[in-house]
Length: 240
Image (cartoon, rainbow, N blue to C red; front, side, top):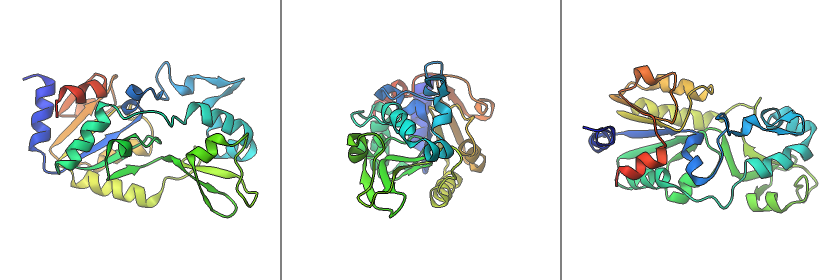
């Protein structure tokens, strides 16, 4: 039995399937990842590494540079869901998939129709004024010249978890709860080297740990099935 057939059999027999995804889930939708050779973190804005710019302290001290980079490198309003997003939505509709836990900040899972999506790192689609907390859309942020400002004059901040910022406690608790309940956990498109998110796999005590990623991960040896391939291609071949 090939690996795709094995994966489909495991999914079909699962009672509580949970999906844990990273940047590799969205690369087939033409959203760049962070840590590959072509990833965002290998780029610079002038002499400043992009990774340094998307931190809380840099946002506070240089919001103009932050937004120049943020709008170009992290916001993709025209991106479309790929086969991974679409199949996960179908599996949720079938009652097999109980939750999607994602490290991504796009809304492609929701665009594909998924309802139970837990975004560990927040979302580019939500923004708020740092002074009065008024909400603003991604469209408003993208159309603003330079640093987007609120009606009250306050600076608008994306509801994205930047470096130096904590993850949302409620989102983390819900994600861990689903991982604990899962009999099958599919981990896809993530290197599993970013903490604390990668640590959440320690809460999995189910039957099947499946890892789908282009490159090897630190958890491959403890997985029941490892597929080193593009995750959108893998899900397309499942033929759901």
